[in-house]
Image (cartoon, rainbow, N blue to C red; front, side, top):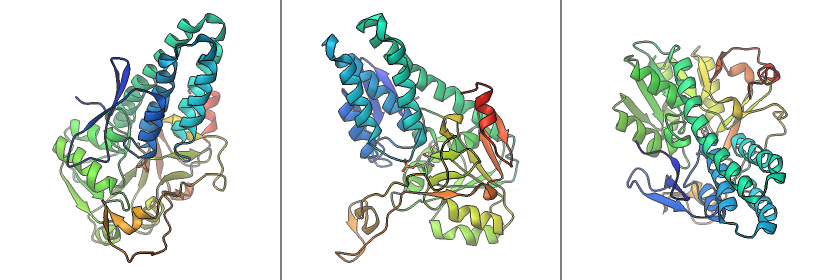
Length: 343
Ligand code: MRU
């Protein structure tokens, strides 16, 4: 089993997701700067995977620093650099805060102990992600029945996490339980995570699926081919508003119109209790992602473009949120989960 991201021989190995599905290329990151570039270039992407990558970036910074007096400054530099890579995915900030707390708590223990703790924490974040995705899969698979048509968007699969996935983790778990259903994967313009990555994973697992272009969703819902939608999330607010790949909101509106349940699968680490719908930073990406498809220009030169990478689906369109702690239903006040000390 190849993991999306793995710490081995004092380096971080990641699958280069920009090369998929043509080539399964592995990149070795030796320092935090390379890790930050990998997140920016989307060689690694998907909220949980970005969180693990950032944590491992901090671990690389600790490992590489041989000057004891500079260790804290170096960790601070890595923290700042990694924070600046992508602005929307909550797990990035969650993982970096968790790493910072570990090194701050270990300040008095000497640099060797501190380095060891930082590296162990990054490895723990990765291992927890695997267990959390498995739990999400198990909780969510109860919602899938024989004969279902399940529509998904973007890639919330093994490639967006360490393995298994969130939305696709639910689909994987249901398939492992021998349920018979069909998946509809939207291609997900502009970067085609659905066509390149979700289709790659589904094909590899032999899960029955059909690829559609994004604008076909309404038509196949109307035809009755879809009876469930399940997507991942980059950030969830305290009251269950869901920030995910741009286009998710449109699917939620369509699902509502056709009375189809709209499920979101995500770990608790994706919830930001302080975020409000109007305070979320939506990443704007390069115009070339819209004017070009995989390097080929499809619009006239000089065409002006809008390219927001995410949108926000208001809570009233979300039928349930599938987490590692169970399936949560509206009305959402997700803060109670944290008061119980679950995160
Ligand atoms: O821009 P990306 O590819 O990082 O966006 C990914 C998504 O929107 C995913 O749906 C989300 O991160 C959930 S992944 C488990």
